[in-house]
Amino acid sequence: MASFSEGGFSSTVKDQLFESQRDQLFKQYLKPASYYRYLNRTIGLLGALKRFILNK
Image (cartoon, rainbow, N blue to C red; front, side, top):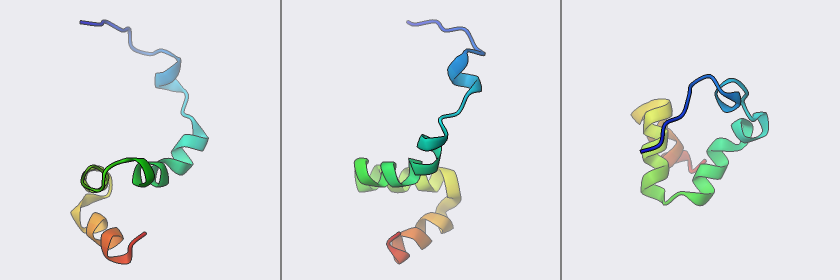
């Protein structure tokens, strides 16, 4: 079991490039079921369905 202290560099600094491209990267590299599970958690079921229907 690993133990890490909280409050390190990665918990206080966000990667702006990754944040701006996260949805596209997840869509590109995750399996479809995993991608829609991610969308469901982040934008909700209706938002995920909307993206699926609009194919964005």
